[in-house]
Image (cartoon, rainbow, N blue to C red; front, top):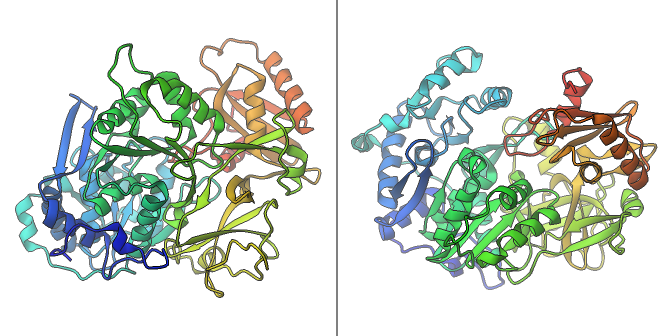
Length: 595
């Protein structure tokens, strides 16, 4: 495909509007198109704030040379289909290592360097599961990687390759590999928020289809659309942000999660720089929007123009408070009312499932709390007895999402809450090495569809469905995600959403650090773990605890058996920043959470 021009989106849509990948289109063939047609154009830019705040760029031609050189080195230690893990810091070496492993015929396993604090167990779990033949890293952390591996069984005999020490000339030894569109390109490990991390087999077809679904749904058809991302490259959303350029022949600007956390204004400055030259797309979870609104405001007189920015917020469920605070803070800098796009995605669907229309603004519906606990979504006026839910819009083309009774496997009518099931070419077919789990979660079958207005219309009668584990509902043609099945709190026969109780807890006392509360059930009843807000370490906790108990009882008719304040950073989170309620509950039961 290297003799063909840049990919034309219209060539990927058939007469009926369905997405159809061009024959032989893989991640690597798309990159090779870009090398052949826009080789000297920038592919990736990295804003390095670690030392001297330098900007590093990689053109498509340079990326091609790095991929061949690193790929040749990989081929010396790995065969076709072997797993090759990436344990490297955020940066262009990570991007080159990921694509080089795929180009070499291996299955890439994007992970993180052991320097990521608090996640050694997750890293060991993923490595033990994937059993890679080699590890790609950088010279800056190679010793740390080797030290981590030498104390673990999985590290015995494992080749550790520092990719930045490989010369471009080594690419002469690269052996071309014929990749197929249904080959597995990489294993995407789940975040581990509700269970141990598992590897999802993502094929070239799934990646290509999902990127096109995003581009068409968000109307990013202008080839002068670029990406900006600080999301970790081992996360599904972070990988998608480096996938956009492969389709477009454009570029993405990257920075590290640490650089963002230390100074969120860096994200805004990068978006403004991109907005001056064309459209720019970014993505982040709830907390990033709230955090940036609080601590990322530009200095007075700063030249910030966000008029061409598109911002995906993909947390489950999406927070309207986060959206409102960000829009209020940055509207003076040209941020359009339609810029923020509440969306729904899941790693097993490669990432993207639904979003609001390009011209739409984020919207919220208020649902009766008691009815919602019974599985019915009944809109009511906004008051203390209502639960706010943000619309995640419409499901992308060539993809279907139905609301299903998780026990009977039958489609539910609009207004009824059930498990979200998804079907499409973007959905993974297997978990790595887990045939039973794959069959249960990725090969589900609908027992019956609605006779009228079925959201499964157009999908094959014998379609395989992904059981997402997420709860949702359709209202007026739009999808709302209400929570995770595994997180539901059931007390005295009534179901409660933990994020709803956590929001009440936060509102009840200024001593609670916003977005840092975990609610879960134990045998005795409801437990609330709250991190202390900044500056409250010496404050008396008893009045705050009583305020929280009163608020939770008034709004939810639940009396917490334990409300415990813990220091900032105590509540475990996944590598993608989600609350790890299951892990928090385990720590609580083991007596490891002191407060």
